[in-house]
Image (cartoon, rainbow, N blue to C red; front, side, top):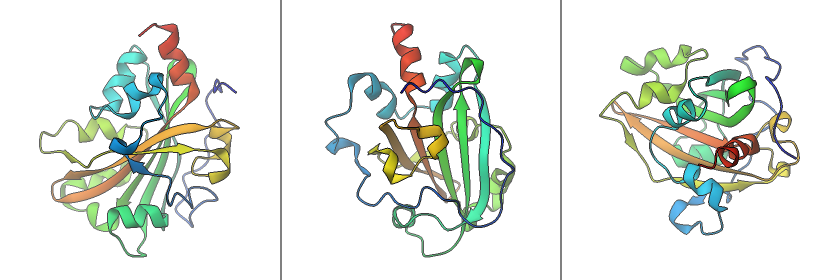
Length: 203
């Protein structure tokens, strides 16, 4: 099934309990260096550690949009907590779609901000609204990034909202970012419509 859905309904931003998906993930995420079966059209996206926001803006000829699906204080998944070396403390979780031309979903992104990372110079990340996180992060020369982890995500794992994933097998990546002594975790899942747009443009 090709992901060609138009702009999805905009649910109200929630600040309550964690949602029905993204509860699993243990064992799915592997170091990028150990991932050898990634389809060739996806390698361009999964293994590039430059700004995804900048790449998508170029791909969309400046028409990139951000649709906030949910933002809430909740408990990250066990896999996320282990990656962040966090206990069972709540974090700010932000789930968005990055949309290409005609408001077609290209990327699902999930960002986990530990509470102690939203202080000082990063406190305004609580109120990003529909601005892309990557545009802020990659504007700082001090930005650090961990090695990439890669995962192939079948629908039954429910790491992606079902309305976004459908019946597709998807590929995603995640890494930690370090800025001003703070740490946050960003996962990005690439949707079929983005790969289709790449094929059409013979890039």
